[in-house]
Length: 126
Image (cartoon, rainbow, N blue to C red):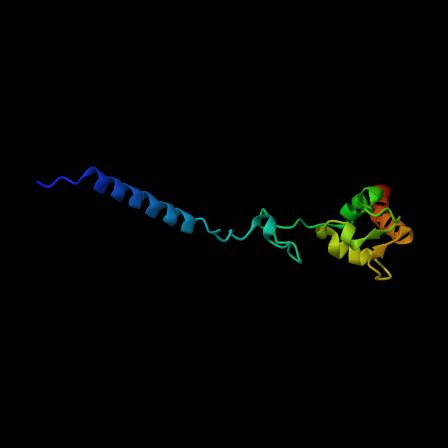
């Protein structure tokens, strides 16, 4: 029976180890991430039945956001730009922006606050 020499066994081990590191290095390429999570763009309209969907926002939520006007006014211009509010409020922002200049000023803010308060006042009067 022919027994392999120590150097032959050592050479086989080294080639096996080097071959496995090459295979590991090839597998180290980044794999595409599954769709979803924070990389998924927000929907234009609310998606019902999906727990990760955008919530259905109303003027009441916009009124709550505008109650914290100064917290969202990043550049402290006393005007709220569309880029300063969360993306979820995009459509409501566009509706509140009466002159369509991409900015809510104090007058537009006051109109939103009054329009949101009016339905609440009428329901308490009944």
